[in-house]
Length: 576
Image (cartoon, rainbow, N blue to C red; front, side, top):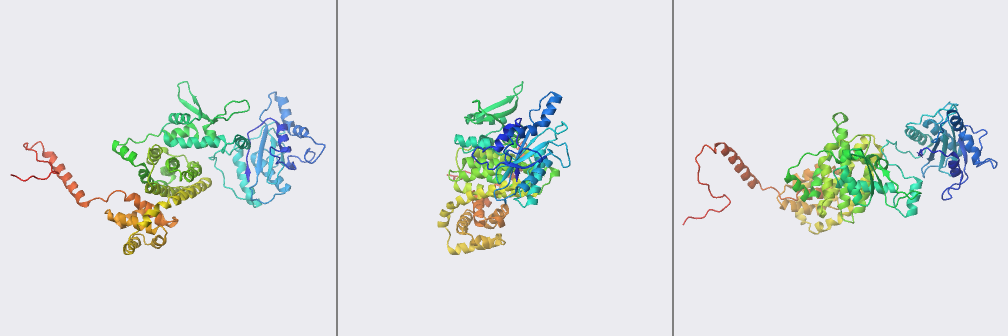
């Protein structure tokens, strides 16, 4: 059951005209009262042909008129409006049941506390099977205003109790971190203009898509402007950025003026302070070589950055800042999913974009993120979003597999913390990411065609049983086993130790929850074995040379100069 408190209004008669009218799409049928502050003697235009909307409006507004005449300062925000809607699968509720529900909601809101004879005047109008509208005038009979601070939280809690008591669909308790749902007016406007999304939804997606490309709030606004989004910054006398609002081209009000939405009204985590905290954290200075290496292989580097995700969000507690660190990494994970979606091949983009949109809800909770702790993951997201080349199949498969596991871990963390909405959002994102991983399955075809001979596969199966005995039978029965056998044979030919590769790959991912454990191991081993195995003899020679040079340096200025010898990498020429 959802109760959505609307912004305060000033026209009681106008709202009554809507509630008792046909509706915008003729959806209002048999409008009538089901409850009110004093049903006896109250005019009901839906049941009494002699009653009028004007009479009912005067009846509700009487305390407002008395207060205005006494104090001389008119009250202009006295109309409280709260639609209450049951879920589509809920059973039919009678008028009596809806009346009881309305009574509980106005009590929870503070409109009409139980046993208060001087409470506000209110009514509940039903004009459809699945919902009612509660209208109240927020001036009490004694002229005082009711205390409505945090009424939305109290009403939400009351709805959760109503669902339990009436056997209705049980929704999760809110935590005030969700984006605002589109209003009916916004949805009708989008439909009228042929838009697939309302303006606030469209703007939210554009802002989130811009975040991985920027490192400051100023850059973000410039990036949005370059993308044809209308930006209205708010600056102080010194020129410092104090806030911002954005508008969608063509979104005009009734006077033909552009409509702008403040960032914090689009989503709680898109306010300027929240964006600054995410974008303008001071990352440690990197060595130029590290920057160069990261820019040449951003897809592999992103997978490497996700290797520490498990340790960052588990085994910590709130006392040592672990919760803030975990929330920061989950937020950065959302940026990495978004960056991957933007640069992935066109065939994978829809599922990855859907995963990004779903995971946006998991990126914010009541836990304040310690954004300075997620440098590596956030840098990986920016590198991918700004790379000029797309990934090869194996690199993308390894990254998507790592994203699936990271999203699962994020959902578990939220669930352990009691963040029901965020955990559900993470589960939805996992489903989309798994669909993207399934779409990468055709890349296994080439590997399957190169499968090693039966005798070699039997030997490789023995290696699997020795390295991961608890999952070996599932791996060997998996459809991806022939392709995994090919990758293992290639890795062994490259000098890698299979037992070590398999153990490391299994440690990176919990195979018990993997839908295709063979494919999980395959993508991970491809990622790990992409570089040649180290040559032990060459490494030992390098260490001996380094050690000898270190011991000879202190005595360099005490020994007589000698003729430099020929470089060791040149062959000795025979004497003539």
